[in-house]
Every structure is written in structure tokens, then in C-alpha cells.
Length: 212
Image (cartoon, rainbow, N blue to C red; front, top):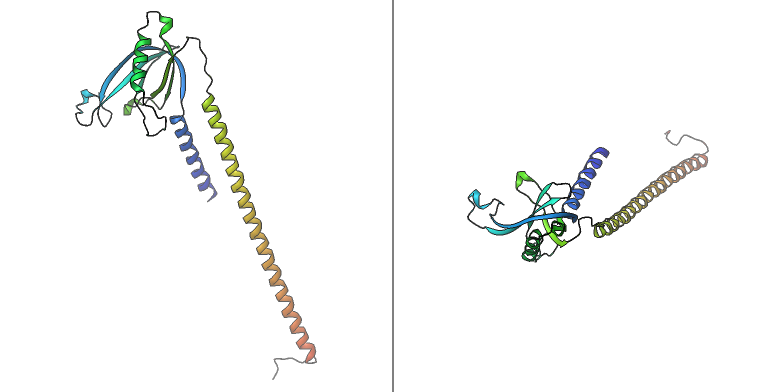
């Protein structure tokens, strides 16, 4: 039973870690190379896939990391959906990306790109851009929001764990005390019964009370 509980806890922790990794923002300085819009169907397929119903216009931003790796990001409003970024400015970000990528000087084509999500080619998934602003190629970024959020989350989790552990310990002590009191009452009842039997025997003068 203990291994089942530990396995279930491990699964829960992995799911929480995956959720945080997907939803928390990630920022990186990259060179913006292009921006375009494509029609996507309900299932995420492009117009070439034959999707005609429920299509929507989604902007894509093309970038290149400082190491030379190409990365593609989705630029779509989250509005009031999950995760709660309340993003309504996808068109503004698309215009900003187009302006940066069209800069005459290569040094002006760099931006600090903030995104969330995963790139999974099998499911045609792209990280979504939440912020994009011009930045120097050697600009540095400290993940202040992630640091504060994880510290607060760790503190809240530790507080809840300590409260639950303290409650469990109090219940265990209450059970032990109740068991000890029950054992003491049983022992007292046994002693009382033995004393009553001894008093009955003494009163009858030592005769066998069961002999007719």
C-alpha cells in the first residue's frame, strides 16, 4: 500500500511539473527573421490539409536563436482561456515582428521573445508568443515572475504539507491516547472483577460457590 501511495504521489508531481513547464513563460533573445499568417482548421491542420470548416487566421513568427537554431512560434490571442495570459494583442505583436525582421541593420533584428507551450511536431503544436520587444543581441533576462511564482508555490506547498502532517500526527496521538485509555479501562475492569470474586469467596468462607 505504501508503494501505491508513493507511485500515485510521483505521478501527481510529474503532472504538476509538466503543467508548470507548459504554462510558465520562457524568455529568450532571438533574431526575428519573418512573420506570416496562415489559416488553421479546428484540428490545427493548415489549409493544405483540406480543412475548410472552422478555419481561423493564425500568425506565425519565425526566429533564429543565438546558436543558429530555427524556431517557429504561434502568435494567437489567449483571451480569457487557459493559461490565463489574457492576450488580446496578437496583431500588434505580428506588426512588431514584421518591423523587427525588416530592419536594415542586422543588429536591430533581435528581440526578447516570451512564450509558453511546447513544440511537438507530431501534433503540429507550437509555443505561443505572449510578448515580443526589441532587445540587444547581448541582452540578459532574469525570470523574475517564474522565480517569485515558484518560491510562493513552494512556500504554500510546504505550509500545506506541514499542516497536514501536524493534523495527521494529532490524529495519531489521539488514537494512541484512546487506545491507552481503553486498555486502562479494560485492566481496571478486570481488576475490579477479580476483587469482587475474591471478596465473594472470602465471604462464603472459602467454600466452592459452584458446588451444590
